Amino acid sequence: MAVSDTAISDRLDGAGPQRIVVVASLTRSLVNFRYALLEAMVAAGHEVTAVAPDEDSEAIAALNRIGVTFRRIPMARTGTDPLADIRTLAALYRLMRGIRPDIVLTYTMKPIIYGGLAARLSGVGRRFSMFTGFGYMFGGERRGLRLAALRRLSIWLYRRALAGTEAAFVYNENDAAEIRRHALIGKRTALVSVPGSGVDLDHHAQTALPAGPFVFLLVARLLREKGIAEFAAAARLLKPQFPQTRFQILGPFDPNPAALSQAEVAQWTADSGVEYLGETTDVRPYLSASTVFVLPSYYREGIPRSALEALATGRPIITTDMPGCRETVIDGENGFRIAPRSAADLANAMRAFLDDERLAPRMAVRSRTLAMERFDVRAVNAILLESLGLRPAV
Image (cartoon, rainbow, N blue to C red; front, side, top):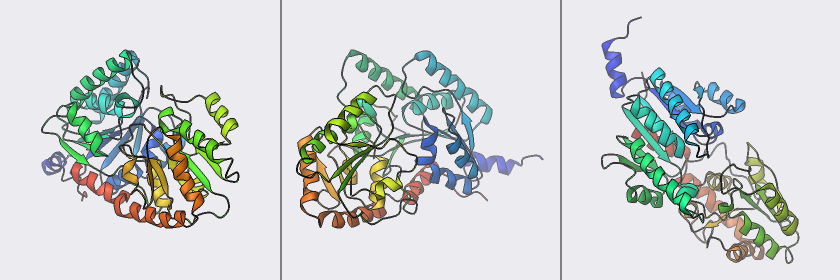
């Protein structure tokens, strides 16, 4: 069947069905963070291909169920091997040349850089990138000549990958300032603020606080800069006075250079009584069994998804007064902001809940309200779809 000139024109100006490629560094993140967005794109009649490096059969099946095509490409998510990165760029270029997408959306560092370069080289007209946080490359405690050189190279690559990008999305004003300071995008590229990845308020329904001993739950990848050592130290300070209180850590070990070893975590659990719960693909039962969510991060967060899920579940939050983290807490209303790297500050915030049993129920209600007011995934996706120029296709 011949394609009409009108159909071609509609596709080019965004009025008709669009071919969209979304590039991620982890297949699971497409389900955890972008599922509702991808589903909305497909429901509007667009042809969506999701691209990531790992073969996660459960996540791929979930994508297929909503009509998203999955394509796997090689990518070392945290590596610095230039040959591996060249293979990533080549694979993405071949994919773009084959699909000929109208729109490419990339998120996290390597997809932004290599997906952006591949899209430019293959002539994709409309390119968008989402900065979900800068991580250890632009923050944290790590220093040294090698990291400084990597940072300079990253800035150079960002600038070339993002040249001509139509819009970049950012989660917090500190990251927006970083993008401007390093001139990562051109003056004609729109910089659009969105309140994180958003949270599905139906999937993460509010649950009642559990009866029994207090449970402080930290959910994060096991990176040093997530404040896990401070969490263990705070537990050591509080355990003698509150022996029934439970301190739990949930999350995977990570290949990141700033990751903790299994031996370190085992030592902390032995010394402080912290419970390591392993990792999970469904955090809801653990949040429901907790009293207070804790994230003492000094990592360069965008807006941590784990905190948004805790808000939606109706959990008070203790987190640091750091970019990305501070956006999830109105201090004294739905939780407490503490100084980064301070086990004493963290222990004092935890003690406030243990000393006043009325505090957690009151703050729990405020957390759910905050999730509804600021972080509903439907509102976040509406901003993204409007910025992408995606109107429902007929």
